[in-house]
Length: 156
Image (cartoon, rainbow, N blue to C red; front, side, top):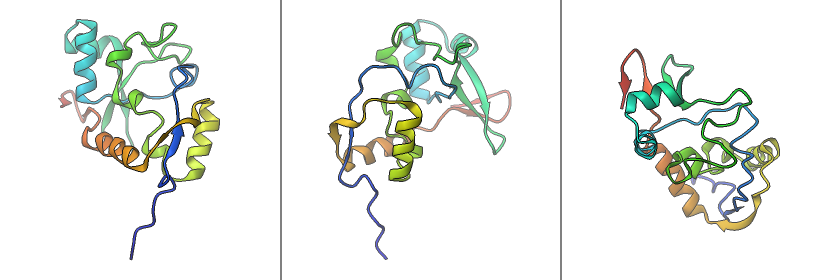
């Protein structure tokens, strides 16, 4: 039986307006991958453990494994948001691939709901991203797992 084409088979429109709606004012998680942490450590010119202690938090998952996420400020802004992204060139994969996240691509309803919930003025407008590009983004996200730990040691 053939697998039905995803709702985005004809592509999706998105152009970032640099409004920062995805970076500020709402609680959320920016989960880090190994390459993300390495890029941020290099950009900030600090050692890995200092970066983890100063900028990250461990978020429990339903299976008891914790995932590494950036901290947020008290107002829910990303810790690196200062009138724009202060680490833009080293921003994590999750940030670079917004809004093409699996949770937003489950259905046309999830895409529309995410657009409305996040208040993103660029979703549904601008550049057409073909299905092949979206699938490549999803494959990259899948290939680069989030940093996790089950105990005191970090799994890299």
